[in-house]
Length: 484
Image (cartoon, rainbow, N blue to C red; front, side):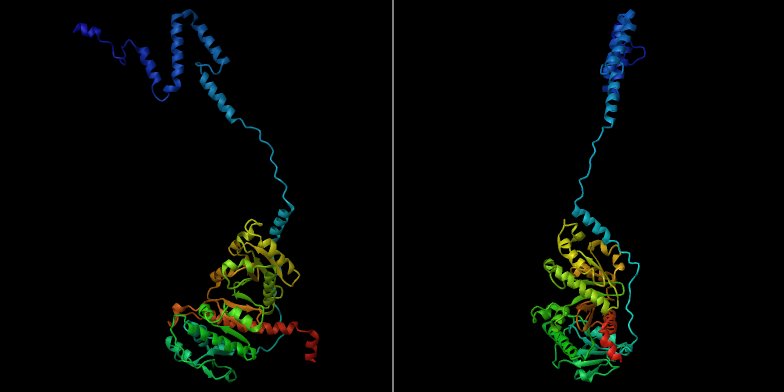
């Protein structure tokens, strides 16, 4: 037992162990800084051993090591690695001198474009909108022709609902072109049996103060509410033709058209695209579709054409003609002495200076420049996407877009149900509600007559505005002779 006890080495970690220096060295190499301090510890151990074996030279050795570290920052020991890292870190943070970079001169073309953009948004019209002042005249009661629209839609329903208000006959003489059987069918469908029309065989039989219905066909037409058929379209066109005939004979002063289904009429009439084009052909007029409301007026250069063909219809001549028609209508039909018109671009961001399209620079802007001498303020082309979002439409009397949805989407978002479709340039005042046939509502008594009523009021107002404008602007010599 005593021999075994004497031959057993002391445990490394016991305080009384004989290997304290070795234990300390191993502890120094362990832990988080093990690798970083390895070289330093070994160096210190070597220096310590050398100092023990040469006690007289220990101070000299330490001094030499310190001097070596100072002369060679990369040397091991005496903090050589730390000094090296500090120096490299300072070098990395040292700011380098940059070279001067100058922009290339802006071309004259680009500078001109920027100048035009600045001028485009200078739209502070301090003078405001000027309204025409007409001579005081006695307003005669106009005769307003009303077409029935698609027989299976809501046309007759909103007509009956509108004319129930007897006060309308104090403002105009309504004349509906349809058949008594059609009127009776719709009155029964929406439970308006108490409402009665004054039936007239011809336009000569109409009476002031009554809701007149001119019998335009005698056929027993099949009616299938909610389904547009070939028959419902064909007889809707008969109503339109009867109204046109009365207008050409001077028997009606304005025309209010109820909604139709273009497809079931186009099936039998080649090239039919809607009321606007059909009326323009019948009267041989150049026309422009305007959507008008209390908040906004918009018009389009191209009408009901496929999007794929829109660009073909955008020419300097077509844009210029649209601006002229819009300007003249704002003066003559809406009583604005010097109208302010905004013109939109065709492409996104108005072409982005030619990056997305060239129509703005090559076609639209030249057309705008040519009409600047007219009695109107015309600005553009504006990017269509941000124009309405920033409220610029409120600074203008009307906005001219290049195609249908470009301006009708914001218009119907702001004024759906209270707007009016107006045909500018037509010798006959013509209006229509801003909605379609609404087949899903036909015969249910749920159709709203607000837009139809608004279209009637607009027709009456435009009729009076035209008379006043024509009287004010006619030949002054002729006017003087008539007075004398």
